[in-house]
Image 1 (tube, rainbow, N blue to C red):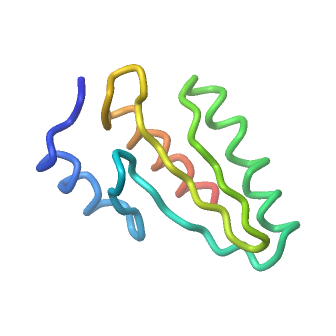
Image 2: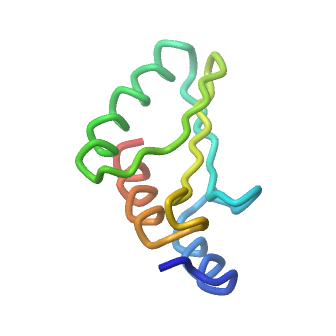
Length: 91
């Protein structure tokens, strides 16, 4: 089920540094250098696979930007927040 704007904002309050833009919840993680960025992506991969919910990942030298949206539902769902919480736990 697609979450309303109010529900998205409510859930974002529990995720430090995450925002909502262009139809996705997003966060940029500073990883120190390129190796650190790749290591974070490598930690995200099994989380995304286990959840069968895959974020868009953008690596820029020392920064990884994560974007989550449920494309099949056309919006943000609880699945996006579940994966975001798991990414927070491993970042």
